[in-house]
Image: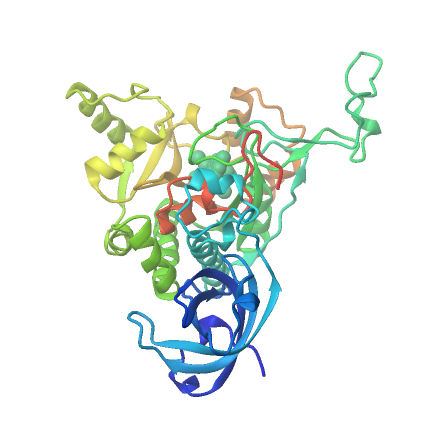
Length: 465
Ligand code: 4AD
Ligand code: MG
C-alpha cells in the first residue's frame, strides 16, 4: 500500500484503514506486553505512535528499534486511548531500513544543548527543534517569493563572483584559480591576475544591490534572493560569513514608499509563518521561548516608529546621562551597535523602529544625500531581539552628486563605470533594501544564535560540513 506522510496521517477519514508510514524512531518505551514507538518522518513536528503488540512480534526482532533507527511500518490506524494524540497505528508489519547503534548515535532522547548540536550539524535536523526551524525557514522563503511575485516584482539573479566591492561592507572572500603557493607576479612584483581564470582580481559578492539597480532601472521592480559572503571576523550570534539576503530594488520609489514597503513586507512574512507554521511555532513557543507567538502577533499590530538618526542618538545620550551603561558610548556620528539598536527597540519604544537619515560617513556611498549636507536617506529596520534586520536606502540618482561622494571617499570608478551609467542614461528616483534572511528566521523562530537557523553555518573556522 501507498505511504502516507505523517503530516497527513491525522486525518479522521483514515481511521479504520490500513496505512503505511516510514520514518525515524524518536523514542521507544513500553512494557512486556506492548511497546510504543514514536515515529517521525520530517513532514511535521508531530510523531505518530506505533503500537507493537508483543504477542505478534518477538523481542529479538524488535531489538534494533532504537532511537534513530529507520522503519517502514504498516498497520491499522485507530483512535488512540493515550492522552494528547488522536490516532495511532497498530503495527502489522515492520521493516527496519537501518539501525542506529545506541552506543554511537549521538541524538539520544534527552535534550541536547545547541552547542553540542552545532558539533553534530550533520544530524541535528533530525531533532524536533531543528526540524521545526528548517520547516519554518522553508515557509518563509516561499512567502518571500510569493510576496514579491504577487506585487509585480521580478526575481533577478545577480552574480556571486564579482570584480566590484558593492558595499565596502566587509572583507571579501577572494576567488581565484591561481596557485596560492606559487602566485605569478608582474614585473613590479604584484600578483599577475591576468593569468587567472577571470583575468582580474575577483571576489565573492557581499551584496547584489548594484546589479539589482541595473534590473530595477530596466524592469521596474526586482528582487534578489541569494547567498552573500562577508569575510568579517565578527564572531557574534548575529553574523555569518555566508548568509542569504533578499534585496528588492524599485524604480520611482522614494523614502515614504520605501519605509511602507519594508514594514508591509516583514509583516507579511511574519503573518505567513503564523498562518502556515502553527504546529512548529507552538512547539518553539513551548520549548524555546514562551513569549514567541505573542511577540510575533505583537509585530503585526504595531505601526513601526520612524526615527531620524539624530533623534535616536538624543534618546541614547539621555539614557547614558541617566546612567545606562553601553559598551560603546554614543554621540552624533557613532555607527550604532546592536546594543544601541536594541535599547531603542526593546526598552525605549518597545516596538520595531525604522531609523532614517544617517550621517553620511557611516553609510554607503550610493545613498541619497539630504539637503542638510550631513545626512543620507538610509533606512535601517531595527527589531526586538535582533537589532538590524533590514538595511536599505533611497539611492542617489543624481550623477554629479553621486560622483562627488565617490570622489570624496577616494573610491575610484574603475570597477563602477557600468553602475554609473544608470545615472547617466535615463536616471530615475529609486530605492531598495536588503533583508538578512537568517535574521528574519531568528526573529520568527525565537532562536538565539544565527548558527542555529541555517542548516550549515559558515563562521570563522567552521566549514567542515
Ligand atoms: O546592511 P547591509 O550590509 O546592506 C546591504 O548589503 C545593502 N546592499 C542592502 C540593500 O540596500 N540592497 O546588509 C543588509 C542586511 C542587514 O540588515 C542584516 O540583516 C543582514 O543583511 N546582514 C547579515 N546577516 C548575517 N550575517 C552577516 N554577516 C550580515 N551582514 C548583514
Ligand atoms: Mg547595515
